Image 1 (spheres, protein in one colour):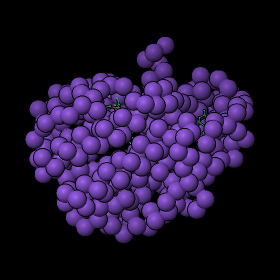
Image 2 (cartoon, rainbow, N blue to C red; image 1 turned 90 degrees about the horizontal axis):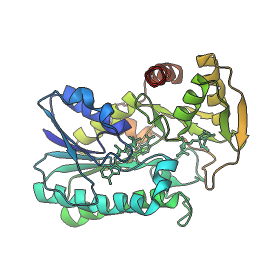
Image 3 (tube, rainbow, N blue to C red; image 1 turned 45 degrees about the horizontal axis):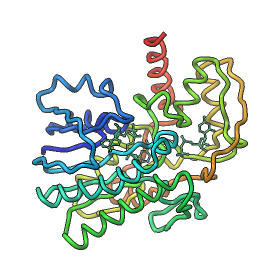
Image 4 (tube, helix red, strand yellow; image 1 turned 135 degrees about the horizontal axis):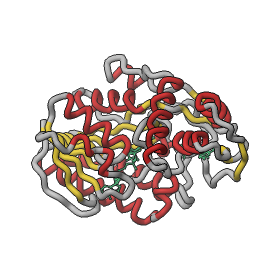
Length: 313
Ligand code: NAD
Ligand code: UDP
């Protein structure tokens, strides 16, 4: 297969490109480098099966490909709130352009959607059938509503034009190659702990998340595009739920850090709880379930950030 990965130089995209090459595919990585980085994919550049294109998906592009993974979109709150109008354009105009491309070249196309489509959920854990509780005019809306419209577009192209689509709703994922300054909780806490700086808990730290290690997520995405029966939306994530306070304590313990825990105001519309219901994913994807335990995943991620900080000393 020749496969296009938009957002391929980002955190998830770079791991996906790597996996697809390992499976023997040709990969075209497309990125505008807003939050992605050449260093994430520089080890892939020597492969003849790998091609890199600098392009912004809000502009159309024509490429002959068999499959498309549409990952291009800033994913961390500080990045997607930096230019909210651009974030919506990326989700909506980007989806229209990629769906148009898929229609033209008869490609299968997978959308990287998000647990944010459930907003601050009143149903717990979240099954795919839950419609969500999203503020349409808040500071997270550019991301949440953009991703919701993208899902609508995918479903309408599927119904109207018989496009071969897949939608995955990704829950919080972490691992090496997360951006060190993207403000997401795992990267923030690890970098703060390694520098013995204060660990910033937003609110009282009682809000929960469920974190999936990147290799488990990529396995789920790859199985999703390969299978023939299910368009999604399908939840992908790790159902192991814990509080942000517990995460902070675990990271301090694992890094042997002298950091103190301090409290900062909770950002607006910050979801109180989040846990994926992955029963459907397990059924559709041949028994898929996350394998990497939090401690193991954190170990790899801490080692990555520790090397990164040494390089920049
Ligand atoms: P990331 O910021 O590391 O990667 C996004 C990539 O898209 C970057 O390389 C960026 O430069 C590129 N990009 C952004 N706007 C673009 C545009 N207009 N044109 C071309 N490229 C553009 O984030 P990530 O964590 O790797 O997330 C990848 C995808 O997965 C995103 O769509 C995100 O919404 C989704 N997702 C991620 C998570 C997670 O926990 N990591 C959770 C839910 C959904
Ligand atoms: N968070 C925190 N301190 C930080 C960064 C994040 O307490 O330095 C909290 C944040 O308020 C949220 C959770 O950690 O409740 C996860 O935040 P992240 O931005 O990683 O992901 P999202 O909110 O999009 O799930």
